[in-house]
Amino acid sequence: MSTLLLARHGRTAHNSAGKIQGRSQVPLDETGQAQAGQLASHIAALESRPSQIWASDLLRAEQTAGEVAARLGLPITTDVRLREQEFGEHEGHLLSELLAENPRFAEAWTQDFSLLHPPGGESFAQTTARMLDWFETARPRKAGEVVLAVSHGLALTGLLCALSGLTPREAMRQELFRHANAAYTVLTLDTESGEVLACSAVQSAHLIPLTTS
Image (cartoon, rainbow, N blue to C red; front, side):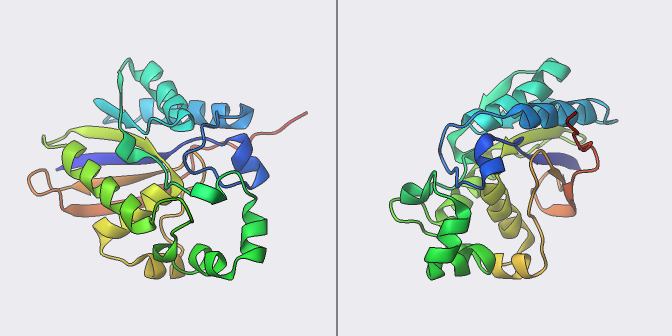
């Protein structure tokens, strides 16, 4: 057996403001930097630590992975296939406004991600397909090996739906695979086939609430 850790990046100003990010190059905010540090400390304390780190090449994911890499003394391999879904004309817009003004978007966002295909952007199916392609390339293939990947919310949801055999609508109905910032999922894999043997989804106990004075 081998292990794949799938983490979402830390918080950004767009996350805090409720804006659609997609491919936008938005850095971690102060809270996001702290979350990345908490994730790094947690992963560094695991009994079996990653020997390889992958990350989306978008800044917020690279910065999050960088905290873990610095703690473990490992390099980062970036890959465009780990990017967030591209939202085209919707990028930078407030989610609340899109939900209020666009019934089709609202249905997709609240009930079935598979319907997401923003104008000028990428469909959820396209996002899922490239994430699966990355998985087949990068999944750990040695017994006992642990690999970490830092990606994005919708991209991770698509991959986990595909690997679990659930449709996005089914997963959303059960409130599965929705990662908070710097939360992560643990997949235990069959080393030869890549079949998911166990899934511990959306772990966030390592994230200590941050207070301001």
